[in-house]
Image (cartoon, rainbow, N blue to C red; front, side, top):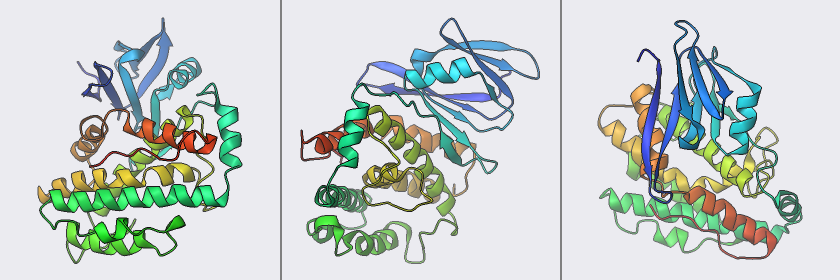
Amino acid sequence: MLFLFYLLFFSNFARKMAKQTLVFESPKELSLRDGMLVISDRETGETVMRSLEDIQMIMIDNHSVRLSIPLLTRISKINIGVVFCDERHYPVSMLLDMESHSLQSKRIRCQLAASKVTNKQIWKQIVEAKIRNQSLLLEKSGLGKSLLSSYYNNVKSGDSTNREGVAARIYWSKLMGKNFIRDRYGEPPNALLNYGYAVLRSMSARSLMSAGLLPLVGVFHHNCHDSLPLADDVMEPYRPYIDRKVREMAEEGLTDVCRESKKRILELFYEDIPADAIALSASTLAGIYEGAGKVIVFPSI
């Protein structure tokens, strides 16, 4: 087949079915026909069709890809993640359904009405889960046992004593070496971390919308230039999954963003991160806002 796009197949044991991630890196025409995704090569005219039921995510990594409005409407309704990349091949935006949950208006009202005390307790749980996973990653990597336990066991409401920041300094020096500095524009493998976090952010925003929450209203992140602050909050305990994969690739000498590194990072969301884990985190967060629960469920790495 001459198509210059690639598919990633994964086992989704929770649903007992194969899911696909489609990554488009060359000019294509994507449309809808009889409930199926139609993929047409704009140079050769060759066409193939894919069942939408088998697709988990679509990543558009070429600015010459064209998508029809009926297709976009349909895939948003059935909660297929669609991520758009910029000229550097980094995910920068995504498609979100505005009517993704039957109780969306109720849950958004509860979210907006949440007290400062509630949000501080939510952030406390998020920071505890993040540092705990960082600590587990260091232990499983043979870099020290329970190095960060005193930090995740002593997080105050709203993380008022900044346990997250203090733990991070120890974490990065152990995981990536003493000379490593985590910086968005820093030396490799920072670019790979950026890419992984961007995909994770998209997945988190999609899950929040599916749970009837508004990603635009954060718990801790409130930067006026941040379009998805709640996604930035919820994704924090999942960052160590990205960190682990990037560390593995760096040890193999793979430190730049390329087709192979992107493929391996995308695999994380089907192989390493438990099935539907982010969706469960989002739904239990919604439960807290509604007063139906007190704990956000996060997986342990």
